[in-house]
Image (cartoon, rainbow over the protein chains, first blue to last red):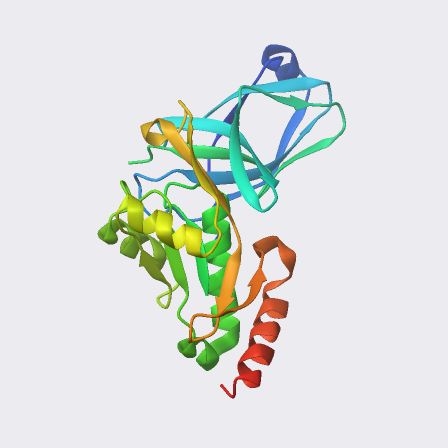
Length: 109
Length: 139
């Protein structure tokens, strides 16, 4: 089940980026329907930036907090690491997908 | 079918549960002969009620199991499942669990048959392998 979700990506260079048309593009954002509103839900999307940029925060009007994690799997054990920022290299797609980078939305009551 | 996780897991567990739900749907009637068990590694928050609400959202056939810390440790030990609490300020209640993501496929007698990973094969391939195994046992 995939639902479109409204989120705002806050970028380190946002005032500059905002001047250029589509300097940063968010492509195909989706999330699984939340099961219990008290539980966090991962949001998946692809980010493309024209310039070298950095995602420093994510906000949503429907959530108390949105955090960025990287899931790392070693010997079959999955661990989530909190990231304070995500680099967006110029012209390259940064993919947030199951089992990799995720943006996690919590407190959606 | 046995796998471990926790309901506050935003990524790996829902991905695995959705994957297993698709495998069960692909198996159709054959799935009624399988007991898919999701065992919590965070039993303090994953009460029987929470587990039931959580797993039933993915598939009506999946059973959620929880218990005391000692019960969970014994179950995880029996399946050689590793899990560990990780303090993480950004997570609800300030912690996350690291855990093994294997999907164990056991015989009705409780003997190990094989193991799958969610990322290891498409759902239809896992369903096909399960059919082959069940045919071997005359199911």
